[in-house]
Amino acid sequence: MKAQEAISEFICREMLYNDSDRMPEPDDVLMGPGGLVDSVGLHQLVSFLESNFGIEVGDLDIVPENFESLNALTSYVERKTSN
Image 1 (cartoon, rainbow, N blue to C red):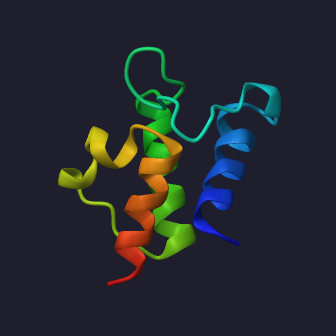
Image 2: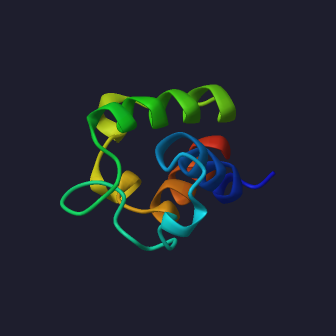
C-alpha cells in the first residue's frame, strides 16, 4: 500500500470515523486554523506514522512543511523511508 493511501485510510478511519465524505483533498490543510488534526489527532498521527512506516518522527520534524496536508505528509514519509 502506498504511503498516501495508508495515511488517507488512517485519517478517514480514526479522525473522521469512516465518514469519507469529509475526507480532505490532498492539498487541503490538515493542521492549524480550519484543519481537522488537533493536538490529540497529531499524537495519533505520529504514532501511526512511526508504527506503520517504521520511522521516527522527531519533535523538530513536526512542522507545517511536513504535516500541513496529505501531500506534505506523504512527501515527508517518503523522504524518511528512503534513507
